[in-house]
Image (spheres, rainbow, N blue to C red):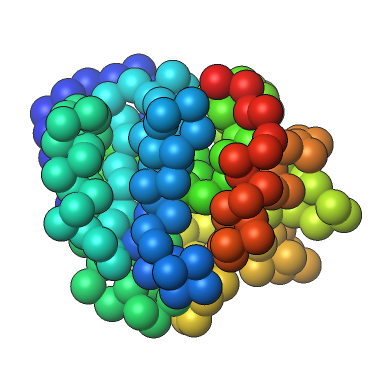
Length: 207
């Protein structure tokens, strides 16, 4: 568990899931670039803009290479390695939530492969969470809700029980959980395949 001694006024921490092996792409998608910026660094910059000094990145596949990158570019972020990353996204979510400090009241869940999501996108989620801090907040796109999302601590025990390659979307589908919805069409594009990589090169993303 993180215990840095740093005190911040907000109980919100950013939790970036970046443990995947990019099997369909064949190369670490966390290192694909936009405006000369690796996707993982882009996600971290958006997170730091909203939760400065309170960013945790969950690594797994390619952990050594990615940690070297973060040591150079983002020395203030925390990292933890999910040694069971092959078990799917749910295991990385559980590892990340378990590592957050006791003072954390909610996790701003971010995926490293949604290049359209920037600091302004996350700020809209944080604003909605500030209004109702005990309620989950989710991005809404293509008729569904999912990441990025804010997950309050009271839901962490439920999230940690998931298995396989599932994440926030399944948590937010629980009939007993009614999240605050934030329209976010820019979150619809994620990078998984070579075709997505080609689309990435041809799209104009705001910094």
